[in-house]
Amino acid sequence: MNLDDALKTFIIESRELLEGMEGALLSVEQAPDDADLINAIFRAAHTIKGSAGLFGLDHVVRFTHDAENVLDRIRGGKLRFDSELVALYLEIRDHISTLIDGVEEGCAPDSAVLARGETLTARLKNLDTGSTAKTDDNTTHSVVAGPSDDHVERVGERSPDSAETENWHISLRFGSEVLRNGMDPASFIRYLTTFGRIVKIVTLTDTRRRW
Amino acid sequence: MDTSEGAPAALNVTGELTIFTAATLKQTLLDTIAQAASEEIDIDLSEVSEIDTAGVQLMIMAKREAAILGKNLRLVRHSDPVLDMIDLYDLSRFFGDPLLIRNSN
Image (cartoon, rainbow over all chains, first blue to last red):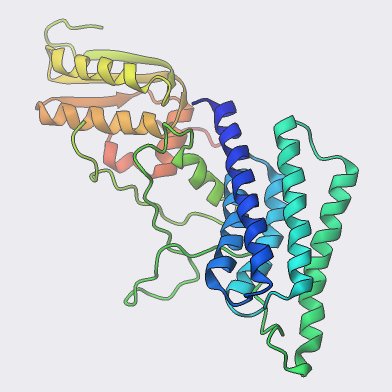
């Protein structure tokens, strides 16, 4: 599989994820606390962002990053889906879809597309301040101490006996077909370095059987 | 390949050391290790233009395979892409071969 094939796979997978995201968004309005639905929506944004990063599609990463942050807060119970938020996320979904179409056509987003992305991002940010201002009405979707914009999901658990540091401990195990499927773990690690500095890395070389 | 008695056996890897060349290179490496008359084998990496994780796996395999057969396989004259990859995975200690220190520029 060459890079073009990998990119095609990314486009196909993104469309599938976006389709699932739309279905989940349409259902979540009736069931705003359904963790499966919320996770499906989050996972779609999260996966598209991660894969886009591997292809250096920075504009997709940037836009999806903001959308994912708010979803993470919904997932954490700090914000709740209501009809307004569902409507916003349907528009966000459509916009990601437009960005993916652009990737397929191999053209950079034009000014109209960029402006649309900025409007949506601004609405997401307003949501933060808007909800915070409403904290006195005691509604369930008021914001409790929103996390900072930069956020990395913790994959591995910090072991209870380890020293407390500000560092993330991330444990990665890739499938045996990962390279054949067009993805190099090294790209993944390089991508991680765009979020921070790798303090220490340990490569396990002894887990494979003899060739 | 130099197989004269006493001198280390040698193999030059040129161009890509990636998933696209891995299958061919794997066999070449295994053959070189198995057929080496000497117990010393040098793999020259100075002409490697590109390397990915499959290439790293091949280097690990070569080291292991040689050790199993009681031979000493050295990776020598690493090109910059190879050094970058060994850095990224922090595998210099695993490979145990001396690395030339590069100019920081």
